[in-house]
Structures are given as structure tokens and as C-alpha cells.
Image 1 (cartoon, rainbow, N blue to C red):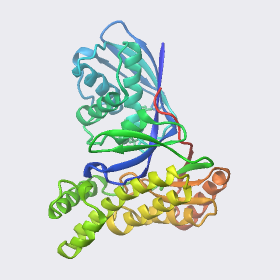
Image 2 (tube, protein in one colour):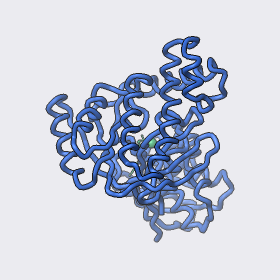
Image 3 (cartoon, rainbow, N blue to C red):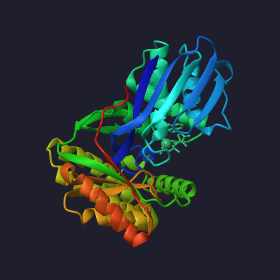
Length: 358
Ligand code: ADP
Ligand code: MG
């Protein structure tokens, strides 16, 4: 019997930068997906998710997208992509458990894929370097599950390091860890309101970014600096300017955030997170009244260093950087004030920056 664990992640800075070939700063958190399993000695695959109370059977020889058990497509996808990559895999059984909320933007899907990839590596003695593992898992989500995600989620789950942020350059696909100052924790707060039009809005933003890059004569917004953007402002439609300003600003905030972290300036880093949210609200328009309120409530609490929406936006969650010793009280205060003002129940997850998959 072998065990594999992979954590979820949170985006700290670098919102909507991935498809613009830019920079992201993320962290693995201390919650994740665990698989316990063994080889079946045949082509039979047997998966049981104790999280969902559901079982799925498959055969390595005839893998195809599962309609009745959507959740099983994540591990089956990894198995399929391993096979396509020429890796010697065969049947296995696994029990899946998790303390990561599903569909909450903490990337339980990538954690599930990475834990599967790692379990397969252990069961069938496959040696993979970390970046290859992350890329195979991403392919599983893109090609088998059918979700067009970037590399950040899988990279974060693989490269997480306790007390370190993860810097991903989405164009060059390079990854680095940056030490994170002590004494702080992360509070992730789900707004408790369903995503609104998430798919449509997301694709619309992508197209607006590509269009803005074309108008600026750049291959991608990654190649535009804020001074170039300001110089071109008068020639651009306001919408293109605003979308570009967000992405260009986010890329610059990631680079400057790393500098703040290197200098141990956690307050400076927190301010960048709050600026990032302001830019989401005003430029990218991917915030919602509820996310704005969560950020506003958080920033009014003593001990909070910064707060912003995290992930795609249009609903979902915020991430708040706070002093660890005040964190439980702050979480309770945010939940109470938010409920009082909206009637919605926010769900808070107090997280530490943790190690990656193992
Ligand atoms: P997120 O990655 O933000 O959590 P996704 O919609 O990308 O949201 O992925 C969530 C899906 O991943 C779930 O609907 C389920 O299909 C699958 N999944 C994640 N964790 C588990 C688990 N422990 N057991 C079964 N399926 C899981
Ligand atoms: Mg996901």
C-alpha cells in the first residue's frame, strides 16, 4: 500500500496573468487530497472517493471520459496521459480522502491530479521531475477532463514549500520559491454566493486582453510595461486600457512583491495585495459587491496586512494576509459582519503556507 498527498493552492498576486504569458505568485496550503492505493496486478482500476461516497471502476486498456462519475475523470485522466506519455502504468485501486473544499477555488482538482500522478509514480516506480509531473497533470485536466486551465494549480501543488511563496513565469514555465516572512497566515474566505456567468465573463476577459495586446503591438500583455501603456492611453479604447492596466499592473506587482518578500517587508507585500483588488474592482471588473465587501471588512480589522479576491473572480473567494496570533478572531469578525450586512454565510479557511505534494 502506498500513500500520496497533494495540497491545494491560493493565488497571492498575479490575477489573470497566466494566459497573458505573465507572472503569478501563489502558495500551497495545508489542506489537500490524499490517495491510498495499490496495484491490482491487472488492468482493472478501482477508485473510491470517501469525500463523495462514490465508487468508479475502469480498465486501463479502455479509458474514456466518464459521464456518470465526473469526479473520476481527474484520476483517470492522469492515468490516460501517463499512458500516452509512454510511461508503464497498469491497474490500481485507490481510496481518496480530502480536507480541501471542492469547487471552492482552492484547486482540489489539481491536488487530486497531482496526488494521482504521485501515487502512480510510487506504485509503478516511475521517475518524473517535478515540472514534468505538473505538466502531465495539467494535460489530464485540459485533454481528458476538458477544462482549459493554466499550469499554476499543478505547479503550486507540486512545488509548494512551507514558509515560501511560489513564483511562476507562465511564458518560460520556470518556477522559483521565495521565502515568506514569519508570523503571518492566510485567511481564505468564500463569499457564499454562486459564481455569476463565470464561463462567459472569463472568455470575454481573455479576448479583451488579446485584443489589447494586439492594439499595443505586443505579442502578449506580458511584453507591455506600465509606462508604455500610459504613453498609448489616448490611442486606446477605454475598455482595452483598463483591461491592460490590470494585467500589466499585476505583472509588476508580482515582481515588486517578490522584492518586498526578499526584504522581509510583509506590510509592503500586503499593500500590493490590496492594490491588486482595487485594480480588479476598477480595471478588470472581475470583482462582485460581495467580494468588495469582504475585502473592505477585512482591511478594517487590526492585524490585517492586505486582502484581495483570488482566482478568476466574479464570485468565489478572497485571500487575506494577517498576523497569525490575531487570525481566529479576525476570521470570526469577518464572518459576523459579512452575514449582518448581506445575509450570506461566508466560509473562512485559516491556512498556513505548506509543503507541496509528497
Ligand atoms: P476546484 O479545483 O477549485 O476545487 P474544480 O471544479 O476545478 O474546483 O474541481 C472540483 C472537482 O474535482 C470536483 O467537482 C470533483 O469532481 C473533483 N474532486 C476534487 N476533490 C475530490 C475528492 N476528494 N473526491 C472526488 N472528487 C474530487
Ligand atoms: Mg480546479
